[in-house]
Length: 112
Image (tube, rainbow, N blue to C red):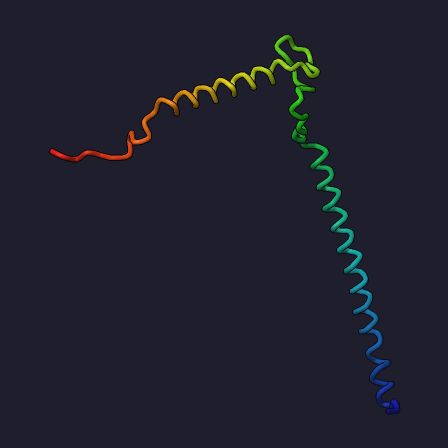
């Protein structure tokens, strides 16, 4: 299909509109990138100004301050105390279950 001279006249008259549309599209992308950069910078500034939550130091006791105000590095007193508490609780539960009646509290007597 050949291009007729009348078609060229129409195309040439529309070239400036196409160029403006392409320019607006390019500027829109650049503007969008700039806006995202500003948002990222604002978010980074906010994070720098806020106080972050402390990370978990683990269960080994490192980083904790003891009663004297000093850092305790691996003293097992707290762990030993927790283990003793758990053992005492397990023993208490075992004693209660040995002396409890399994039928107790299961039936209600409503006779007069």
